[in-house]
Length: 130
Image (tube, rainbow, N blue to C red; front, top):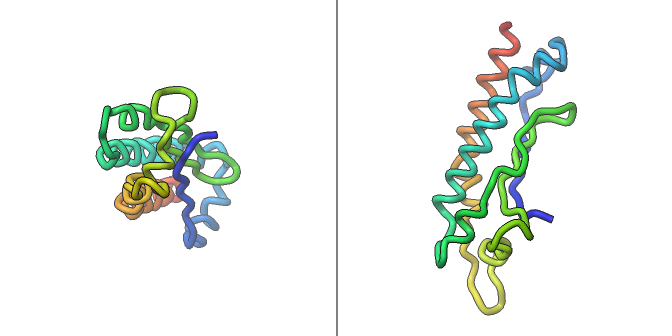
């Protein structure tokens, strides 16, 4: 199971109401590039903030999912355990009884949250205008 971040947006009722008038396919086409762009932003910021000893953690952070579906926009960035050498992301993020926390995922998400919301809002506005 991967260690991941998930972004969920709320409070866009007016835009969502207008978007319901769009076809699902048209909406997905408009928002899919935004999901990819948002995941790339989180990937870059997470890698920038990841603590470095040997560099395995930084290099093993990847985009796990970036898509739009019937349940909303999904952006997942994290470390897929078993696929690389950095199976300790959660220990760095939250710490252990022997090692203090060195959070990097949460601060990366917090620093990019508003920019991602703005990207989504702009794409939603464009979708509604079309």
